[in-house]
Image 1: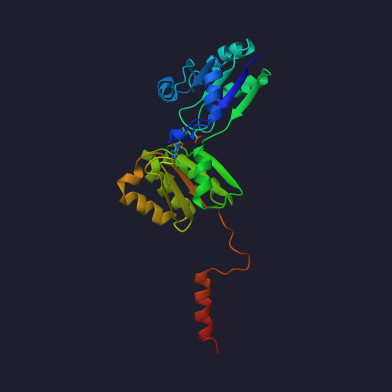
Image 2: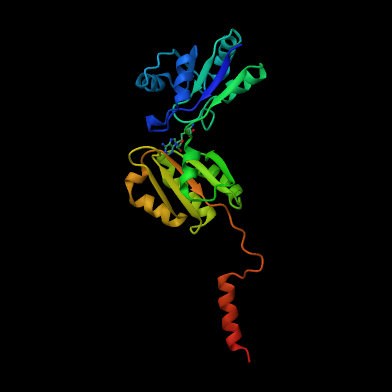
Length: 249
Ligand code: SAM
């Protein structure tokens, strides 16, 4: 049988395509793409003429059978998404699972991934982290999810659409508190790449004050929850204690 290659493509800067990705994209029989028109432009840029077939959220399960038949018939297939690594907040999971279940070799061809790029340069602890993908689109769902993540000690990573960025920051501030450190990583690998790290309250105000920060793609990273030291006394209690002590004979 053939092999299914899961190929990462650039998230902005086209120079980020890997030599191996280009070789695989040229050599396979067919490229399964999330959006064939979008990917046609990418392939044209690199002079890759391999035929494209759509494999997106809505046809992944049905189309899967056809891809499997081709793999079993000996053809190699490359799976790509619009940007970055397939399956990471992108289609491909059903196809990969079906292929593995059918005994097909699934081969990753690693490369760009927005969450890893953001984490690698944000300056937040990176030894342990949680990728949450996109938060629920509606406020109620978002608040409920954030409530569950409030005391997560690992660095939190979210993808967000530009038109929801401000609402999302407001909800993050509401649940995690205005003092929790966060980093916004915007337009990674592109001309206007921006990293801004501030406490959530200040970050929200900064983004609200500058319309340019509400455009383009962005990754939000939030520092993990830090348990207050067991024997630490809250500052307000200390002040009360101080006053009381002064009054004592
Ligand atoms: N599969 C992709 C990956 O490997 O990162 C992610 C696809 S997901 C549909 C798109 C989201 O990824 C965007 O909404 C944004 O949160 C993030 N993203 C993608 N490219 C980005 C970039 N150049 N800069 C910042 N965030 C990016």
